[in-house]
Image 1 (tube, one colour):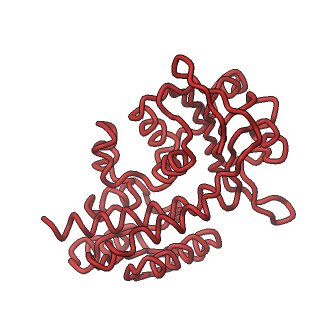
Image 2 (image 1 turned 120 degrees about the horizontal axis):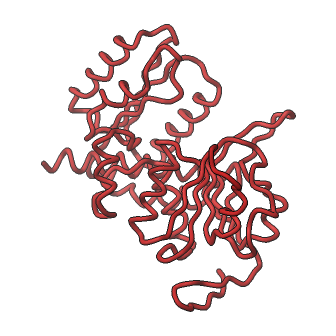
Length: 295
């Protein structure tokens, strides 16, 4: 892995750089819940609205992961002309279906549908995306209350833990303050006693913050936002961004080629956080089924 020397809670990492392989780890995590899935027989329902190409890919990956874990999978597709009332009525049907343990409404949704109202309609016990205010609120208390945490932040924590990257006492900078990634991952890191700075579009002199980071997490959706001059030597970088270049290639928010020359750890895009999000969803689904069936 890497050599580290502890000194007053800080750590120093000697290169070379190591890739945070989310794809390989996600497969391990999914395989690790197969026995529990066989015992609790969870079922996941996914609601897909419209034909968004990215959403189609994400949903297909979730289906494959369910098949690998032995989780029953049900997909309900609707045209993007569906009304908010019709969508919420469909959610309520799933809430009442005891055979379904987890529910995901694939985002983004058409502009005429209010996402907060849709998320609020999901039964918190089946909210395996971890977006409901109930599950987010519990997460603020401590790691022990992270029963159904948001999938992407949960995947990030699992990735850091797997590679033995210290969190406690470290200077962590999160770039992005969305309700789905930036805010919850900042909270989860605070729960683990990191010192966390959360930056966003209105942050002045972003470089002055990112340059201090022992761990840098970037979730903005802007290709090449983080350049090599914005990070210090030995930083661990988690790139959550997903962008498509003019030639159709997928890239993150970090200039991978140059930042990787200074980093001790860095996640690739694709193959980093994306697969970890899916693994966390699978683990949440199994956990939700266990909780529902042992009440």
